[in-house]
Image (cartoon, rainbow, N blue to C red; front, side):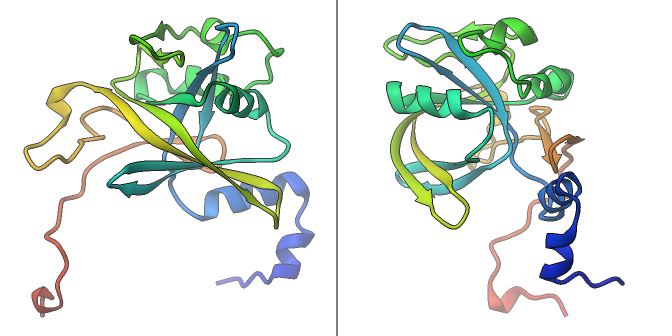
Length: 208
């Protein structure tokens, strides 16, 4: 097994290092983030830097890079205070990937990539009609990360739209049944499959 030290990692070619470090941490949550500006022009971008923060109240976090094409997404969130997260299904993951392209500001990725805007009453941010798990969030906090100039955006879940058949009796959301995809690195997409659900771990239920 080869050992890499920090000096080795920093010596990697830039694109190689980016791919290497983005994939080594494992599979990540994959969502399309949809926003709209004050003129009602929508924006759609695929993100893989999304994580659970809390359930009561329900908070979800997301990391924004300092030099990415996500600036329009962040600008819209700061302006409107709301945004949506929409799962990426296996039947349209290629179109979802295309939303990461650098389209001119003011041109909606919904139109360019073949997705349909879906709205609910009194909520400016669009949902993705083709998704079957959709969250509407309100901006609660932006945390600057000074070590690399990224920003962590924390949102509170305000609305949930999903197929009821995906929810089990105990509240578990079956992502495999939803055909949600996951991602490793920046461009490697995977299907999900349930291995099994285990009991709450206690010290006295370890198998010998």
